[in-house]
Image (cartoon, rainbow, N blue to C red; front, side):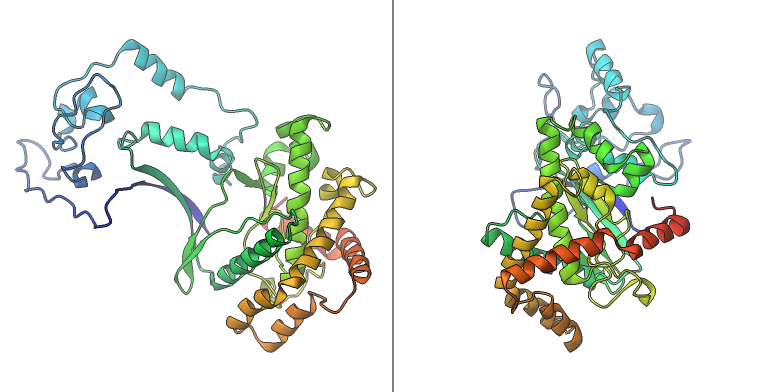
Length: 399
């Protein structure tokens, strides 16, 4: 299964690699094990100045501050601000109170509880800004100006070339909509293939899956947005609702053009601003899970989505359909550039010709409007969507 990790990095101004500093072997102390306890701070080159978290401390000389025996460790040896000095540093009562308050601070509102079956939910619900500040304050290198925090998803056992193709197509579609000034919002992410069946994926920050929202809160999508952004007539909710509609229309049209499958609620995210974001593009064009070809809906549109838009007779639902129509008209103006990406990947003549046909280049705009009406109606009343969601619930526990 894929897992997410966060990595601390230190950026430098130079472009040359910095070799690690070689240290002479230290003689073992009497009555101590031969293993020498060190940390990676020894690899920092001595030319880097030791930066202090406290303005009153001297930088001193970057000595071997992580090589003490356990019995010799003091507060100063554990402090990130005393790496350049062997002298003991007193920590004031105010600093102790601050650290204790930070450690015992109440979780932010609407935080997810820890779930042993889904430990990532709590970490993903925490905002990136909060996570960045928390990890920097607890890092021994956090005071350095070049400190950065990077996240990545490690995925093994899947061919990520399909994901890379889908990411390129999403970028082409987004560029076409920007050029034609259509307010459709996609969120492509970076993918790095390391081998045939493994790679790294850029995580979508400040977002959780619809499955995690329903499992953690027990609320509908509409009720969750009201909880997060305020009552229906508030400015915060209206902004989130608008973001939801514009992103849902973008991914609905993208799902139709790319024939995106495996659209359960674990593969659809909602970010902190209300945008819908689809992930996991392993099944596109003629490929489907287990090659069953079960999902026949043009895209996923559930009653919960429509409820967020104030119902089928609302202005927001009409806006949703208008955006799909405008997006299709804009995309077909740039369809040659988009189709060229698929041709380069040698997906096969039938896949390319079917992809080209879904742009409906020869249809008039009234005919396209009728097509969009039919696609939305078929998606909303699709039996296969409900059956596939039930299948995912009973087999994988996805709500």
